[in-house]
Amino acid sequence: DAGVIQSPRHEVTEMGQEVTLRCKPISGHNSLFWYRQTMMRGLELLIYFNNNVPIDDSGMPEDRFSAKMPNASFSTLKIQPSEPRDSAVYFCASSRGQGGTGELFFGEGSRLTVL
Amino acid sequence: GENVEQHPSTLSVQEGDSAVIKCTYSDSASNYFPWYKQELGKRPQLIIDIRSNVGEKKDQRIAVTLNKTAKHFSLHITETQPEDSAVYFCAASRDDKIIFGKGTRLHILP
Image (tube, rainbow over all chains, first blue to last red; front, side, top):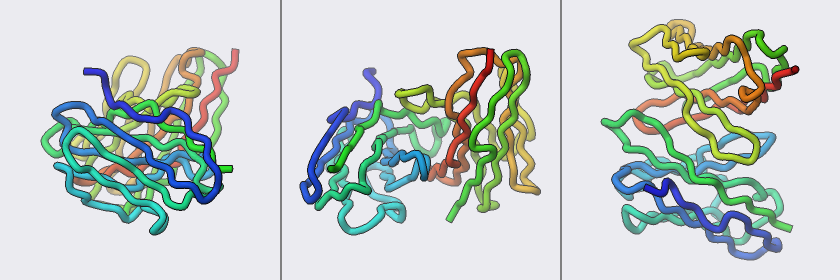
């Protein structure tokens, strides 16, 4: 398996623009997580899905952020409108879910810069 | 919800010495405690984990200890080597939700 695949790897955009980050989890994994990493706040859990259903979105900072998982092999994280404080590395991770080892497999991350 | 505190934020040790990183958690229902290592510019990767029915686990030069009563757990790295330089994250989990500490940047000095 190729691992968790994220795109784009880098995104530079201007304030107010819409940003869409994409993730393909490892085949057979039932849980998918979106994390945001900054120097100040570390790795923050934004939202996670189990069997394509959002289970906990309490970490989503505000209504500008939304996430979807239309099927088992694809998820998106959307920011609209984007702001400079959204600049961070966004990681997607997947795991086998309950019944598995619990190990998270991270993608390479999407580095977002909002000017 | 769960809150994980991690200390220190930065740690420098001489090559060959030991390094210890400590974490506390708030949710007594948490039952899974993994540690991840993130090298510069790379993704976090699991290095060791421990479940709440175990007090200590060791894998070569790394070991984790868990004190459920006090709600704290620690990572110990012995005989540190240059390749141990990285950011280390502790985490606590109940069900599938995994919450990370803010990380410890470990520098191994020559």
